[in-house]
Image (cartoon, rainbow over all chains, first blue to last red; front, side, top):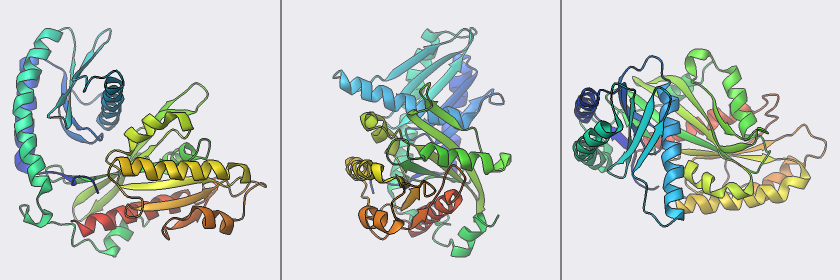
Length: 164
Length: 195
């Protein structure tokens, strides 16, 4: 199977949240969101109550995947930034460390220039944390703090999920 | 590629429904959506053409409950079945944990089933997966149609590795949850194995 499962531990999660939380303040953004390229949500900060974050994660990943393919079709390695402008809200999407997607939703209280500038700085920090996360994901799972809870899953546990 | 989030105590797995065009992949996940408790499902997203043909993918997030203190979430995707959407199919297979192949039982669609299965094998390989090792279930859909081939004949042509096979009528829901439960179990068993 290609690669390993992606494992996110408390320590990296806290660091990621700190970075995206600061990024949100610095950009004056409504929402800052981090998604794995496969569409799994990693972390989100901001005005989230009106947003379906699971759907947003899946669609952002689909969008980036399609755009990556478009880039290769015309001989580019990737389009590292996508920008969608709306009447009220705008979406800034960028790829961090080749592996995860950073989504910033902002309105007229911010500007594209400011978001671009801050995202660039934040991306470097996030890429460093992701490196650690990927290294930990690649390590045998039982070496992770607290051991793997999954080796102990019984058939009964699995059956219970489907009991109704 | 399962995403294990220790911070949120969640396991996220991705299941892809594959198969020839108009075979019933979208019908499968629409039925799952309709029959699932609102608290256990997210929004069903369909990126489809005006004539309801899948253009990019359908997406349905499901929450199956807790296992060893971890919320178990499955993301169901369908691919567009039409032959010329191959680029999109490749993208959707990225990070897949389990595959359901929805075959069309009509005799006239057997060639399309075989072509789609070859295409699945090839696209999985391109992503570094192997059909022989990935959790995989075969569903024979549209069993209610008069032109349906005998199930044994379909199995003879389509079974690749002794995978579980389910006969289904997705439009009526027959076999839909059996298929889903089986692939979900296989994915969790794979997770238990670790690496």
